[in-house]
Structures are given as structure tokens and as C-alpha cells.
Amino acid sequence: MSNTSYDTYRENVAGRADVEDTPELVAYYKELDALKTGALWTVANKIEPWQPKSESVPVLWRYRDLRDHVLRSVDLVTPEKAGRRVIYLNNPGRQDVSAAVGWLYSGLQVMHPGEAASAHAHSSSALRFIMEGSGAYTIVDGHKMTLNANDFVLTPNGTWHEHGVAAEGTTCIWQDGLDIPLVNAMEAGFYAVHPDLQQAVTHPIDDIPAIWGGKGLRPQEGNWTKPYSPLYKYEWAPTYEALVRHSKVTDGSPFDGVLMHYVNPVTGGPVMPTIGASMQLLRPGEATQAHRHTGSFIYQVAKGSGYSVINGQRFDWTERDIFCVPSWAFHEHANASASDDAVLFCFNDLPVMHSLGLYREQSLAENGGHQVVR
Ligand SMILES: [Fe+2]
Ligand SMILES: [Fe+2]
Image (cartoon, rainbow, N blue to C red; front, side, top):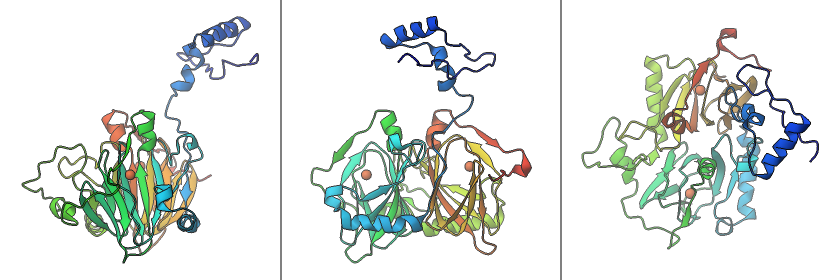
């Protein structure tokens, strides 16, 4: 193309690339193009921004808008044909990689009583957060776990896993969270279908939380060296109880209220190498201060209602709604109720940020620490 511009990213700042196109330079750039090369100064300011520039946009997915569509998929496709009946969250800025935000994937999956998906394994790490219904279960490497609303279960990288709903249960919907876009960006994704399509349950049902779920306790026989948490299932009731107890003796964080991380009980670190998760409680009327940090975050409202301001945009949420906070976006959360607490489940790529030395955080200094809503 004759009108190609190579100086789009010029910056008139000392130390930054600021080269104006000339006919001679453009001819030179084209010769470089032909050799599958390029002059760094034509792209340097683009590929090395002053600070993170997320392509993701903040989005609120309202459950009342999505639920009927999720349920409709049951009539439209069978789990055998679809593999998994999932409506995925497609961030307008990340449609090229099917991400909900940043390098995280998320979707809403539905299953009827008596249905079961085939067993499989993949190099993506995954979690599920149960939204509604009874009788859901997940089997991970022969360990079957029963699941109720607001329970959170891991299916780590490389494990055989399958999901289903007991015949005597009700239609279940849950949120899936995976690092598929990250794994694909690393060009490291593998997928395998179990040779028998289903796996045998080789341990007593719910043995995992019985062995590893003791608060502040570690089993004597617990010899665990895998890079992810042996506690595959984190139940809602003890999590909520811990938050309530915590909230009675501390103010928590000015930016997060009372927030607790789900941890690997062996290491105290994140539940999986690439995905972290937390649950946070906002007391009645509580409004946090704004800050921003690297990392991508997907929230689901486990309880209550309120709003979050993300990069100056207000999103009002209620139970079961999902919203995302892109990397380096200012955010603050508020509980709109004067009498009830609000609780937010969150999963994120913080373990990646921390382990690669890329985590940074900054509070908002102006306006009393609150954003001006646009
Ligand atoms: Fe899976
Ligand atoms: Fe934050």
C-alpha cells in the first residue's frame, strides 16, 4: 500500500521514538517488511506503553439477562454434541481470544438432572462456582465431590475431571473459570478425552474436604507435592463464617473490605499456579476506596447487592451478576444495603503476576480516594 503510515506511534518525549515518515524512510521500511523485519522505532512506543493498556473493557453481565439464554441451550443442543453446554462471557475487547477479561476465560454452564459430561483433561487450569440448583457433582482424579450454591471446586491442569447432576437433583447452572487464553498465548494447550469417557470413583465421596478441609489443620498423611491445592472443593458455609468472624474484629482493607484468599493448605499460596481466588465481604453501607493493580479479575456476586466503579463507570450489581476488572483499571466497591452484608467471589491471574514479578498496585490519591463517575 502506498499510503502506509509508519509514524503513528510517535511521541515527542525525550527517550521515546519520534521519527517522522519520509519517502526515503518509508521505502526503507518496505524493504525491511519484505525481509520479515521492521524498524523498532516505528512500533516501540506501541509495544512498550508507559503503563498497562488493557484491551479489555469493564463489563457487567446481569444474571437476569443471561439466565433464560443459558437455559435455552438445553433445548438447542445435547451435551453429547456440544461437549459442554456453555454460554461464554465474551469481552468486546478480547473477542479474538474468547476471553472474559485479560487472559481469563469464563462461561455459564447448565446441566439437567441425570446428565453427565464426558471425562477429560486439559492443560488449562479450571474452577467452577455453583450458581443455582442441587445435585451437582464434579469428579477429579477419582475423587467425587458434591456441590451446592456458592461452593467452589478446582479442576487443575492435567487432572481427569467430569461434571454431572444427580438424577434426583435439579437443573444446575455454574460459572466456569479457566486460563485458556493464557495457556493458548503460551502455546501450551493440550486436551484429552478419557479413554472410557467416564472415570471410576475410586475414593469415598467428599473425601477431599474431609481430609484437607480442616481449618488450620494439616493431615499427618498429607504428603502432597503437586503444584496445585489438594483441597479441590471449598464450601460456602465455612468460607462465609470465616468472613463474618473476620469482619467482627477488623476493619479489613480500605480497598477490599474483608477479603480472604482461598489457599493451598500445604503452601498457603494460591489454589493453582495460574489462577487465584478470593471471597470478600462488604459490611452494610461499606464503600471501599479506589485503587488499581496489574492482573485481571472476574467477580461474581455471591450475596447481596451494591455497585462497583471501574475506570469511572458505575456498575450496579445484585446476586449472581458477574463483572470484570481489567488490569490497571481503577476500581472500588460499595454495598448498597444498610442492613445486609454483600459478598463477592473473585478469581484472577494474580499468581501469574506475582510469580513473574509483574504485580504493581496504586491507590487513587485524588477526590478522597473515590473516582468521579462519568
Ligand atoms: Fe474441563
Ligand atoms: Fe483491587
